[in-house]
Length: 560
Image 1: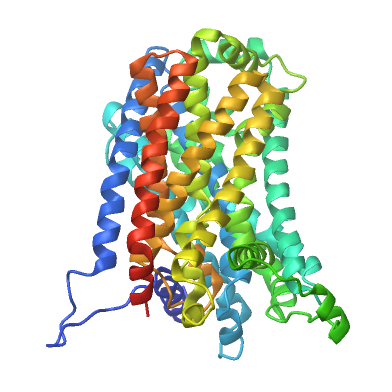
Image 2 (image 1 turned 120 degrees about the horizontal axis):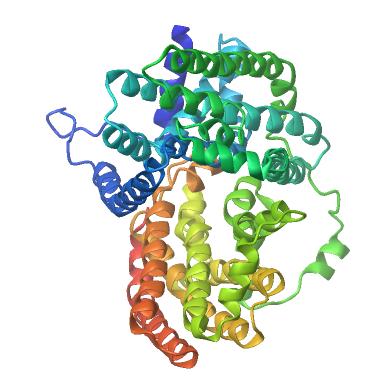
């Protein structure tokens, strides 16, 4: 690989993670870096998830090994990672390729277009390796140990691990580059960037459904049954067809001790190489035409004093500041895609897409789910699950967890505004609550329409979920108050590369899990469950609110 590409990739990764060498007075690098400690905490918090994946994988292996189809685990793991990589790759590519201001600094340098493209692509691939470590690595290790595999399997696993993100990211990159080439036009650059990002995500979801539908409709149920019972990992290739290239990767690992396995691995590597060459070729044609002038934005021609006077309406300070926060999130592409749009993506991924995919088939999974929801004995669990989903939505959008960080180097301006620090913090919290509530309403309405959720449970879910959203929104701003990321030169670093979002996400996941687990253990009826949820999260809201009211302004005043 070209030396310039390697150097540029290192620089992009270093700036992306915001890592800096910290030295003490003697000039030695400090081991006790605050960010290193934070990464360690996050790694430890992920251990329960990884443990769960290992446990589930081992159980599935034991069941499939009885009919000689244990290799299906490899197919499922590779496909799951490929789809996650493809979907989130759309957002990563938008952020790294287009919404990062470093492109303006790279263009004048003695670098070829292909070198910049490759470096940015490798940066995105590295981010996806972190996802693989959580999702795919445990599956590969469990299969290798349980199946008694030798060194050949682990060597092939290393190759597959490195190559799995390549194909889905190439697909995501090509889609994004073509869209941004033709939507990044006109005076209103930000609007077109937002439209291009939405189109890219819609195409990613649509392509996902098309691929899965095409595979499911081409399979004969009788042939599948015979294949499944025949043993010998014959079902691996069938499952692998659900994503381009996954079939060859899974077959290669499942037959690691034979020449057939090596051939399949080489085919998989060849597909990745050919796709990469196509990406470079298309990238040199369309990428720079879509990125040039990206930072330019059109200004309003309306400078008429009379119009300005008519638009100037006296308003409360809290309402005015809240309006400013909302407009900033909506008008800034990187904030809109990562903070606003995410509130509406989850219902589409987990409910709308499966329903569309199962249309016209004999899939009975949704009928079973409807019957579970309709059963009055499950009402309390359904309510707890809805509240847990609301918590998850509020914790993953990152609005309050980046509310201070988004001010960046302009934070000093906030200290001169004619309103108290406490009022500013309240407005930032309310902004997160508003968008999280809209996302929760979208989820409840989707469940009510598709899964026939009862009116009473829907109303109770909204009330309890709304109260729970306050908790996650307050934890988000408290985390950002104590550890704001103000030193950034592009909005991407303030949101996408801000560890505060990850920390608040982990807290929300823990709260969501404890909510469902606790109600399951208590085995209470619907209204008792509602009372418990309102009481618990109400108390938590009051405690967090009082803490923010008591210490928030003091902490905010110390931020420089």
